[in-house]
Each structure stands twice: as C-alpha cells, then as structure tokens.
Amino acid sequence: MSKMRRRSLFPQVVIDRDTESEESSSEEEEEANVVLPEEERVQKGKTPITITLKKVCKVCKKSGHEAGFRGATYIDCPMKPCFLCKMPGHTTVTCPHRVATEYGMVPAPHKNTTNPLEFVFQRQLHPRLPPIKPAYVIPDQVHCAVIRYHSRRVTCLEFHPTNNNILLSGDKKGQLGIWDFGKVYEKTVYGNIHNCILNNMKFNPTNDGSIYAASSDGTISCTDLETGISLSLMNLNPNGWEGPSCWRMLYGLDVNSDRSVVLVADNFGYLYMADIRSNNKMSKPTLIHKKGTKVVGLNCNPLQQDLLLSCGNDHFARIWDMRRLEAGSSLYNLEHKRVVSSAYFSPLSGSKILTTSLDNRIRVWDSIFGNLDYPSREIVHSHDFNRYLTAFRAEWDAKDSSESLVVIGRYISENYDGAALHPIDFINISTGQLVAEVMDPNITTISSVNKLHPREDILASGSSRSLFIWRPKKLDIALPREEKRMVLCGEVSKKRNKKHGDESDDDSENDIFRSKDNSLKQKKLASKSSSYKSRRS
Image (cartoon, rainbow, N blue to C red):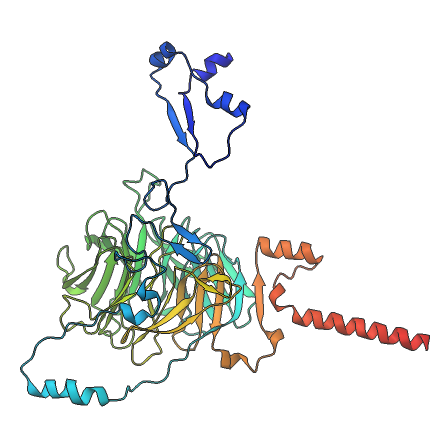
C-alpha cells in the first residue's frame, strides 16, 4: 500500500498548542500538519481531529487557571466554592473549618417543650454533670508495617474475631491478605479468590476460620483462612461479560447471625440473601435503593438484627425492617446532599447512626427512636476525593462505652515541617472536636482505609498498597528498637537487596529500622581496630 493511500485512511490531525508549551520541531510539524486534498476528504467522509495541548483546570476543564495540590497546599478552582466545606466566599486555605473541626458542627435542633422539669434540667443540672466515660487512648505511633503488601490499593480491612494479632485485607485486584502482625513476618496472600475488586468482607459468625467476601466480579465467596480454598455462594454473572448494562457488581455486605443469612447489594440497587447453612441463594432480589444506583453499604443493628441500614449513590441512607422487606417499604430515608459512602449503627447500643458523605460531612443521629428528619450533628471533614482512592469511611471505636469516638482518614494534606502529610483523624462526634490527628513522616500517601481494633488499643490503616499497625506511644517505650519491624514486599525488597548487596532471601528489614545492623557493624570495626593495635604493640 502506497504512503498516500495509508494516509487517506485517517482524518486530518491538528495540534493546538499552548503558548507556554514547547514548540515542536519541523519534522513533527510536517507529520502533524498533513492535509489531504479536499475532494479526497469529502469522499472518505473524514472530519479533522483537533488535539489540544493547552493546560486546563482539572475541576472545571477550562483554561487560564489550575486546581489541585501544589505541594501540601490545595489550590481551589475559582469557578467552584470552597473544596472543603462546599460553601462560597472563601478558599480551602482560608476556610474556617480547617482551623478547628468543631467550627463546622451544626447542633441538633431542640424541640420546644412546655415541660418545666426538662427546662430546669437542660439549663441548670445538665451542664454540671461530669462526662461518665474513660479517657480516650489514641494509637499514634507506627508499630509495624508491610510495605507494598498488595499488588493494588487496599480496599477493606477486618480484624479476626478471636485472634487479636490477625488482620485481613482486600485489594482492588480481588486478593485476600492475612497478616499476623504479632509475628510481623507471617503473611499470606490468596490471589485466586476473586477476579477484581474485593469491596467488603465479614467473618462467619459460627466459624471464625472462614470469611465471606463480596466482589465486583458479581460473586460472594466463603474462604477458609487456613487452606485458602474458596466456595462460591452466589454468582450474578454466570455467562461472563455481556456488556456494562448487564454486568452486576457486589458492594455492600453484612451477616445477619439471627437469620443465618449473608446480605449483599449490587450496583443496580438490589439486595440479595444467601443462606449460611446451605450456602445457597435465597428468594428473589429486593430493590432497596433507586434502580440503577450502587448500594455501597449494609449494616445490621447489633442488638436488633432485623433492623438493616443501607446507603448508596442515590444520596440516601435507608432503615429497613427485614421482617417485611420489599421495595418501597423502608422505615425511614435519611437524605444527604451527595453520595453516601458508609452508614453504621453504633456498635454497643445500636441506637446511634453514623454516616459519611462525599459532601465533606460526617452526620450523626443520636437516637433512632427520635426525630430522624434532620441529623443531630453535621461535622465538616475533608474526605471528598477525585479518583484513584478507596472511599473514606468514618468508623466507630467499639471499645468506647460512650460511643462518641470515630476514626477517618483525611484527604487534604497539611504541611508538617516541610512534608505534605495526610493525617488520620480521631473525632469526638458528640462535640465535633478533633481529638487527635496521627501521622508518620514516612507515610506520604493517603490512608483512606482505617479500622480500630475491637478489643485492643490498635489502629490498622491501609495506605495505597501498604498496611500499617499503630499503637499508643506509651506502650512502645519499653520495647527495644530492634523488635520493631517493617516488612518489604515486591519490587521494594528487590531494589533494597540490590542496593545493599544482600544475597539472602529475607525481605523483612527496612532502611528505617537498621539501627541494629549499623551498631553491629560499628562493633565489628571497633574490635578489628583494637586487635590491630594489640598486634602492633
């Protein structure tokens, strides 16, 4: 085929360059500005394609300005309101909600009452009552870590219900990781369970050696942690890929132990059930959210398992009674302004509701038996993100008897001694106060997945492909430094072994924790020099 014939198969390409961009060479211009004869272009029906190289804003897609992170500072788009609080009139840098979290708290509307006893209690007695709760214990120091443990970003975490040192993790590739952080080096990754994103997982209430997982490949798996053998409870795509309009993905998952069923929800708004005893699908799916929208979260009430809380992309969190579960029969609909990424009942009493929404709000309802028209509090917090991240979720601390402490990662970075770090925030949802912000100078990625241990003062965080275990500083004072470990996996360990000329297969050391090796080398050099001096004398 001649050169002119090959060119006639493609339309004209016009490159529109920015004035600040680098000018192309003469050869590039000749190749880019190939103009076919008008008659030939009309015959082929080809229209010119324009490729622009101008710098545009990532938010509004207009030229003349840029938005996004510049070091540790987030630059707002002038065409949009403040990225943090979503209100006009100021930028994220000058937003008052960055100074203190409690400034963004909206108090609960108090109902007017004619009862004089309640009036006296609220005005005189209630302010004098001391808070009956223990002091918060914040895990604020990295105790151990596994660097690049997963091949893709971490999507969910779960602690073992009986073994305090076992942490399970799922990733975007569908892998299931099991890490014994008590021994640090004992880690296992099962990569043959799911074909794509592992969105949620819960332990079997009758067998702590198996775990249920929901994936975007449309399957529910029950995996034995010891052998890695997986059993499929449900497959919503038995015929494989038949187009995006038919492909079903599973997101929300929870286990109802009273009814012995696994509850899952898909990307079309439907709820499915699978029997734990027979490992089979039960009944027909029920539409619980707007048709065609994702249901990303399910949570059963810890005391009354028939109460189900769901949330999704239709901007609602909904409360259901499983005894009469059918489309449109929700007990209450909690409206939000944007997508609701998580919704949980309080872990002890089950009377409170905590939701996380992409409008940078954490909402709290103090009682499910009270007025649910408006939340008791709205707390402004930075967790709205653009892409390439697992959604932020505010998680309860199950050890807190007052049910007031939650943990959530922060999106907007702060400047800490010249480093752009993304802290993990501990918030008192009763007052809206920021209790603590924990960070480590070696963790420069965003910790979007966080889980508090249900029995010990431990925080597990998933940042990109790595896992970190945090403990309170006071517990680490008595520990020798050589007992701390940071395990390297994948390409990081290979690069480190090449750099240091290490021929061993041990990839469990890290440059940060090499003080023991350095001290041993210094001792060897000192002993060699002393023996040399003795021989000379």
